[in-house]
Length: 315
Image 1 (tube, rainbow, N blue to C red):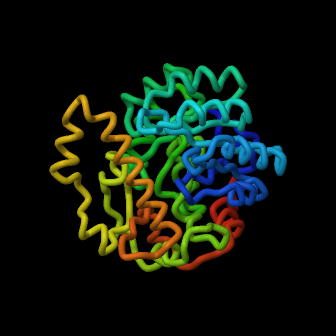
Image 2 (image 1 turned 135 degrees about the vertical axis):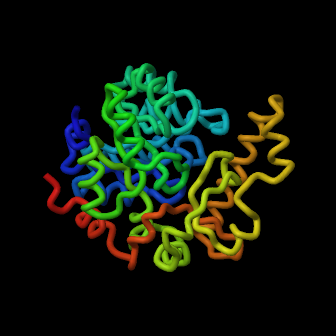
Image 3 (image 1 turned 60 degrees about the horizontal axis):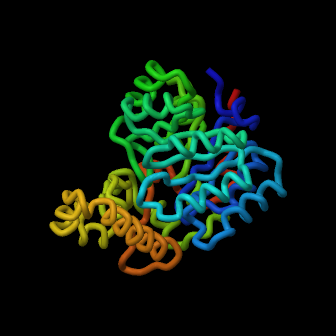
């Protein structure tokens, strides 16, 4: 099975993960300059045409492979417009998150664009592989943001033994030893996020970055209040106050078939607004996405230095 560096023609099998409001074109450019790939969430762009401009800007800067993350379920009301802009600008690959990627895979392949799909279990992984996905991104229980339920070891073993396409690990990688470990378990590469937030070039607030140093792995909790799906966040005082489980109204709405789709969209929008406020402005109401990898973050460093530490001695 091909590794990610061969699939994307890059030096190292690493993707700087698409973190909502965190991963920027500047960070992706630095990633490309240092031998890895990077992906940007389409949801970072709210105005028509801005996503396409961002893709074309990076393509003008570098010929190296980068991607865009696209949410394919009903909660993304801009899905059709974002898909059109992606197909027009043609990045090397698209990472599909949530929902059915059937249309995305079909349309992307017509333009020569690869599709990697986030999965958390074997059932969805098999369905995705059967649809023609080029690789799976195995989101494990150590991932930040939307998190899985299985450990890296469990999920990689299950997927690599039962699926016929490459499997990219997502969650738990912050150092060179972590990358080496997941590759030894059969991963084709790694999608890495949290450790890159603690970089000088990342545009989030200093308070967010410092929280990655202040808190540890035991301070990471899963909340369903941001999108309805389990999301790994730092257990700040505000998170403790509001809790991590849906309140009674949210629960009743999500149990109502008629209201469920609308509710998911509303909850997602409200969650995105919370994350945006927390990312760039320190207030009491802070909800910061992060993974247990914060345990390995001790200072804020240049992004290139972090990348080089993770990829050193890779063969």
